[in-house]
Image (cartoon, rainbow over all chains, first blue to last red; front, side):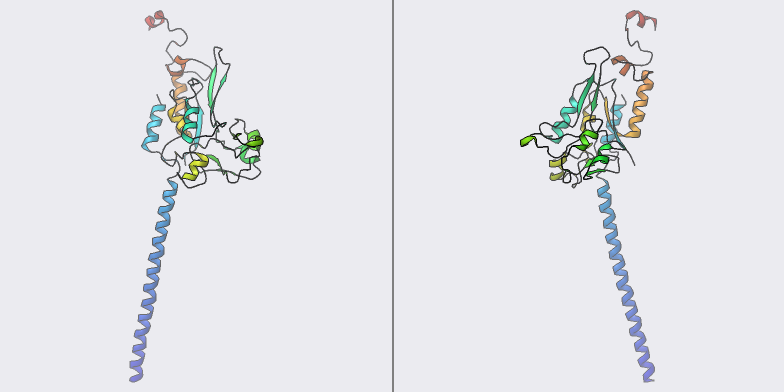
Length: 66
Length: 210
């Protein structure tokens, strides 16, 4: 009886441990996902350094068609 | 991905040198260096042609091929740029370029050639976009500002075109269709007029017929 109770308690601790590890992994995954998103944003900003069809450029093309 | 190109419509260029002046002013180009210049053939003779010339940002650039320190690189938009931190001023690119685009400041002592300088398509250099260091070495980065090269934007007759090659080809094709002829005809009326417009002889009698 006592042994069974001990086993249940161990099972509880084991479950709590696994759950904790899972939660920690989830937190890490979210954090890493967030950094990926930040990297994507940075890359997008870097891409903006090149040519893009802005209103200014479109206006120039219109004047060149005269 | 758009590919950046220049094209100069020799039918429209009036040799005003506005592009040259705008370039020097925009990028604060040092003395003795002209990133862009206007070349005139048969100057003063009927049929003369002028053309604004700078780095043409070749798809297969000979300057890139001959550079011993490999300081040239090409951006995703096809703009040929170079790194002045790597350039040793040897001048090989000057001899290789068919347009004479690479320029060397000659203000130093003993005829010392400094770092090569050339048209950047207003796209700066390897430094951070629109940074002070980039401006000091290469001039303003107008592409990062969502603009096009100033020389093309200021051209009063829109002879010098710069931007997406597909768009420019379409514009130039439309001009040729409007003129009804190729580049062999010279004059204002052919540059701007319709195919039916009396190009050579705008006589009143000709207007009366139509």
